[in-house]
Length: 539
Image 1 (cartoon, rainbow, N blue to C red):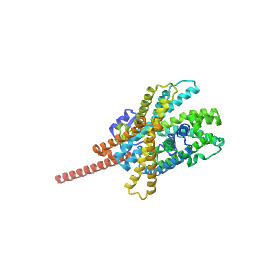
Image 2 (image 1 turned 45 degrees about the vertical axis):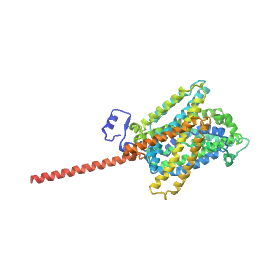
Image 3 (image 1 turned 135 degrees about the vertical axis):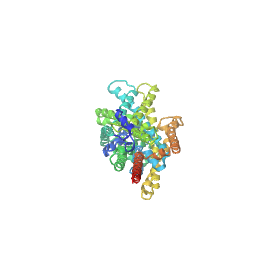
Image 4 (image 1 turned 60 degrees about the horizontal axis):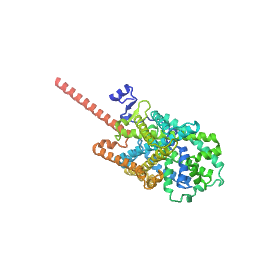
């Protein structure tokens, strides 16, 4: 691709792998994803097997609430309400910056700058945190099936390199990798669900887990925090808007399919766990088995071979989630670089694949640094989950989840502001109502998350850690807002671009074309005048 810029042409001619895009080329490659590819890319981030095997038993064990299936139904309803406004916004704004682009279009560029940094920190945390549990589980696989002792950080570092390499490839290649892993995961979980329902515990096919009475207790707020993290990923659909052929159609469609599908899938799967043990025994069994609950239940019903395959797919599912979050972080960084919120180098894509190469590379470096930091400070014996799971995965996972919840609440407010400013409040009235309800619910859940962060990260009440980790999100927001305010004061033209994405450069291109046409017209007029004057002199 060329822009007519000599510098760009030289870069390509020199064989560089990265080209800087201007005008219409400062965009990701379009037409790479259809409904299926986009849906698979989004759903991979939810890591269904990791949720069923890890999040669900933990929530049963820690919070002591039997009604987890009902929580998934309630949260799915809240997120569908959120999606009505969010999806409508996606018809008007197509930007790889997604959350921060929407927030800037509704609440202004300064708010958008704050949201951009929160998104970058949150998704980086989610992605890096998974390396902890991934490395730990791979280490266990080596110990179990090959009788080899491998430190958790070795497979984590290898995975970071592989994810980084895949991040440089075309997004449709990534989608195929994610799709294969995701489909296999889902099929295996469905097989367990069917087996559990076909062979229930002594209480039979009880619907007790859907009884509202099961949600009584002080732990309901924290249980919501655990469960909402399972949905993270569906909100990523707009990130890929520039890489689809019909973003105004595909993005809303995928969002609703993802939210509804995840809610139903997790509600049924968590219910199947209660059926397999019996509602009265699910809490005690989860406390005893912890993350081994699903594998214990499958071995007794489906045999050792199935359980062994499930263990392997548990790991590949985490890999798919890491790759999905990696792609999102790279695109946020690209959008921020394109709009002046990060150095211009981030607003570049690979000349061969069209992927946001600099953003991908930077995300890989961040992940490597975090994994190495936790590896160096890990003084526990190999096989101890303290550093990789209880610290890296738990701390960073909850940190990221809090950041995304804050972004979703802010996006709900932004949707209302966006349509009111456009004079479309009456036409979009019901969407504004659903956005308000969802935004309030998300704000309440985020408040509970901050309040109960010590429980979420297994720290003591009032511990410094339970204040520092949420404080990172607050600090990112403040730094981003300050950056936005400085841009508004010193570079108002850059501030005006925040959230516009490639639209800003299309406008620049049109303005440059108009200036060129005016200059050409002026030159022609001057030449005609000179010719007329020369003719008059000659006569």
